Structure formats: C-alpha cells, structure tokens
Image (cartoon, rainbow, N blue to C red; front, side, top):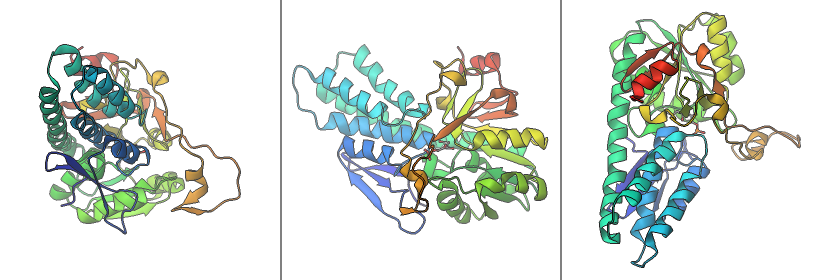
Length: 342
Ligand code: MRU
C-alpha cells in the first residue's frame, strides 16, 4: 500500500510526489520545513487532511533544526506562520498548526522539551487522520445501496488524507460490501486530480470507475442515472456552506435539479469555527499558467484565464455532511454547533 506522507528516522519526512502520478512514483525526502511548504504550494502533497498532516510534520522539522537561544519561541512562531499560510483555503492546515501555537502559549518548556512535544503532536495528527477516515467511511457506507451509480469530484482518497479517504473512502468501503457499484470520476481541470489520481486509486481499490470530463457531469447524471454525488471539503463554515475543489458547486446545482442526494464527506477538523458562512471563506487563486497548460504543455493562445482553486456550495444544496462523528442531514448552524460542541 502506498503512503502519502510519513516520517523516517525521527528527522526526515517522505512525501509521495502527487504531481508525477499516475505514471511515476517519486518521493520527496527532506529534513527541511521549507521543502514541505514548497510541496504543499505546488500540490506535491494535496487534499485538505493530507495538507494538515504535512503542515504538522513541517512544524516538527522547523523546530528540529533550531539551536538554543533566548528568542527561540518567536522564531518558532514565525516559522509556524509561514507554514500556515502556504495554502489558504484548506482549514485543516491552520487546524494542525494551531495545536503547536497552543503549546508555545501555554507551557514554559525548554527547546529540547518542545522538540519532543512537536514530534509527538505531528505523529499524533497523522494517526488521528487515519482513524478519522475510517470512521467517516463507516458512517457513510449506509448511504450506498447495491447497483448504485455514484459521481465524485477531485481526489478524496488515501492520497488526499493519509487514511482510507473521505468521499472516496466511503465509496471504497461500500465497494467491498455492495454489489455492482459504478463510479463516475470527473477529470477535475485544471490540475486533473480526478483523471490522474482518483482513477489510479479506484483501480487499486477495484472500483468500477469511468472517467468523465467536467463538462460531462450533467450528461452523466441524466443518462447514466447517477444515484448519488459525494465530494470532499476543504473548509466548512458554521452554517454548512462548504468550500471544495472548483466545479463542486455546479455538481450540487445539478444534483438538486435531478433530485439526487448531494453529500459532503469531511472530518471534524474541516469545520471552521471562525467562519460563520461561506462568504468568509478565502478562496485560493492560483497561477493562470495552470489553466493554459495540460501536463506542462500549453494548449491555448489565450492571454487571460481564471484559476480559483475552490468554490463554495451553499448549505441549502447539501443533503448531508458525513463526518467522523456521524451524518448531519440538512446541515445548518444549530446542528453543526451541536456536533462541534460549541
Ligand atoms: O487543490 P487540492 O487538490 O488540494 O484540492 C483538494 C480538494 O478539493 C478535495 O476535494 C478536498 O481537499 C477534500 S480531500 C479529502
């Protein structure tokens, strides 16, 4: 089984370079937190929960190289800020980094003690992520019946989470116990996380998977009789508005039009207590070159392109959110606050 990200010999981490998949299996091995930041920015490691795990390991690598001096706490805070701001939308990253800030604020530890604590926290974030993925899959599997046709977007499997996955984890688990499931995976332009990564993971999980371009979604839902859409999430506001890979909103609108359920699968760490609604979610805008090119080859003479990495689906279009603590049907502020115990 491939591993998205792991720690080796307590001082280096190994990242499966997702930019090279599916044709090459290459790893980035580093003891430098700046290399991890670069890997997060260029999407070598991607998917909200996996970014959180990578951020945690980056925090440990950052402190690991520090020498004792009187100003070490400020230096650590500066590096944590740098890690936290490497990608703005996936809240799992700041969720992970906040754990380290809390230690700095609350405890008067020496640098060697902090190094140990940071190491343990980073390992713990990864472990937790695996358990949480399993729980999401267990909770979501009941939504899927024999002979279901399911549509998903982007990549939400092991590569995006380090565990079994969120949306794709639910689908993989259902595929083991239900008969005759069919998955339709959108290619997910501009960076093709669907065609490159989801179909690769689906093959490994023995899922009957058909690739469609993003523009075939309405056709596929109508003509291939899709029963259910499940996607992941990068940040969920307190009212249930959900940011996920660009193209998710149009799928939710289609699901409503064709009266099929639209589910989001995400861990509790993807809920943002500080965003009241989707209006407060910052959407990452990426370089337009990603839209001009497919696999490094320029396919257009256009001089301008939009490249928002995510869009926000309003909560009223979401049938339910599958979490590690259960499913919230028809999500709203009260139900989410109750789930988060706030
Ligand atoms: O830009 P990416 O590839 O990091 O975007 C990933 C997604 O949008 C996923 O759907 C989301 O992070 C959920 S991953 C379980």
